Image (cartoon, rainbow, N blue to C red; front, side):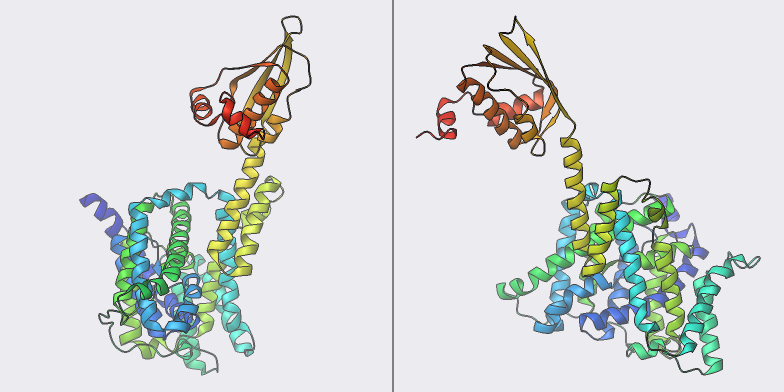
Length: 496
């Protein structure tokens, strides 16, 4: 256990600390912006980001991953805040935490097995596009100074790592923020700063129990929002964990992450914050800046609070152009450029799933809907592909008095119709043998089609024999087939 603590907390102190500083600075404008989206005071988003980041550093299942207030979650809060106010949002945040902890114990993270790589790629690309689009308001209707500062920031970010000795030591996004802030202060140019985003808090968060009636009416008000927050929060967190796993080539505990997100959201709700989840953009910033352990997440959360409470005057002077440059770097780094090159090599079904996930996510600004569409399409393409892997051949035996049908492949809802159409019911033979030794029946649709095949043959006066059923197929056929039940057959064929 000591070795695990050493590895997760103190194996990369310098890198984690510097990365945490960069993340903390980048979290401030995002937390404020997400608060505005949700319709609450900027303090709510800032307190949430501090609280969630600090708690998840201890409870999360993925070292080096950043969790805080997010835009995907903020979009789901708008209606509740508008109709019922902040107190009900805090109550919904607490319930979200409870549901996420329950999801962790129920091991619902296992459902990630059904999310194909093409869906994950589409999700990542869509998020990269959304991150870039979120920066456009800061680049629209502004003076030329903003464009120059943003381009200069991108230049620093991408060129500073090539500076001898210090280029690889100090994170270039941090250098970008410091240099552009200094240029802004020295030049006095008229551009937007963090201070223009909203008022920063001047006190530490305090314990707040939501001032709502504890009754069923309140539960029915907050439950729909809490369920949506739970699903989107866990989905984005699991996706982010998978991406950071790939970036760092290390595993993560998805079930612990679910529980950790729940605990963090409960803590956020009790300190006056809104619900949050893992952030792909900030996690990528953290990893790209050298963050690998839990210390980077803790530093980001603690420093965020210190900055906005005790150094608010300095933080408010950071030009938004510097942070826009950092977020553009994140969107470029997040986007899977290989997926564009692979469009020619990958199967059309894979490309459609990826592009549909991107289109729906960007179009709806809802990550859950985009992933759902992607998973649904992937499942349909897979079912169609497996359904086509079905061969049914036949041969005569016993001087033409018996025909043997050999079934090879998977029989289920997508292939059951093809299975049923493969038999010649008008052929005059005394006996039909259906060899299923190389076939597998998966569902009720397959069994019902088998019933119809057997019944049609018997109706023509042909004896039917089923041979070679494997154990799983025999079990489902024995349990659900009705072709040997005269009463059920009569009912199926329209009798009374």
